[in-house]
Image (cartoon, rainbow, N blue to C red; front, side, top):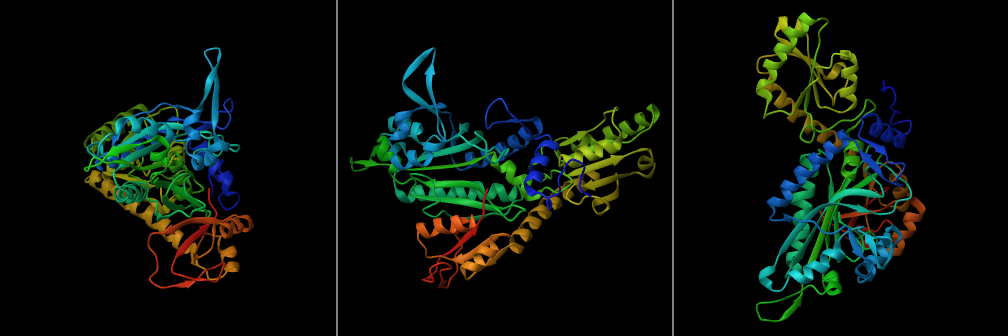
Length: 480
């Protein structure tokens, strides 16, 4: 039975998503600021967990954090023609400040390649300064006409890495390192979301990039969500902003740069990959609260006995489990069960006077709602049991998402088959078409090439659209 207040996925997937965001208390619409949302404490706690996990990986690969201005001189954006063309419709400008018209408007950053490029041109002088590996955690603004919390908002939060290298090979190595060791590793291991790593098509690549790579995930409606991107910018921004260095032979060279980022749309990916008609489901490794304890009692005497047992039982959890004891006296146990289920806490532990007599507790798994996920276990050894169960739930969520993706991905050999397959999921096919061909397919099917997978077949085939022989396969899908 779907939870009251949540539209079933099968009835209206889009409304189901919005209901989860609202009912799980993740965000609110900032109706006084067009296109923006308020991150409520539960939603922001998930973002903080994402930040911590990614920040650790980013720093482990030798990068350091810095912060650059929110406002960018408009002339900076105009220096890289392809880049400004790609972002022009989304840019917000500041033309007046301090009671006066500005001599030059500022752009509120849609991304920071241009202003960071300006400073890198000051900081880089010699090959000894390279590589320069900097990341920033920031907010950006892209003018969106339609708001979908976490997925498409005018202002959103993200990290953006920007690096400078002496050679194209070093820049390419950096781009793929971030894709594999930071993004894919985090999303698969911490978020339990399987991804396909690939190259973006010329049509879909980042404006101004030489090559763009991405990780693509499948949501429960069969649509794709781009969960992270990593760009080899070549020398385009280095030439636009004169980022040069003197090499070992005392010759001035243009540098090679990269940029890469993930955003709060990862929260949207989490919701749409794992949650159900009962509410939010959060993978244990990412969950701000992994275990919630609900004490059950009818009077003060029972409360005293139960709470004493709860305190003793949870004392050894500190430092091992992220837990919360829900001892609110003004709410019934049933209300609490419902609330924590809705908010996606991986494990609920219930304990009352009868459980204490038996030396047991009741455990409810969030990934298996109802009787299927409930069991009674001894209090002895409970900490180790919960730790093992959290790992089991983490793996189960990943496997469930992977099985769903595999069941909704099909190899297609004809355009008619492609048109049918994108109605339900990913269409994997051989491709030798042009950008114009890709645009026509998008117009006719609303599907795009999500990526050219890094794992390619060892044999040739016929292009799904042109019939030409090719050894390259791509993934077509509709996307968020």
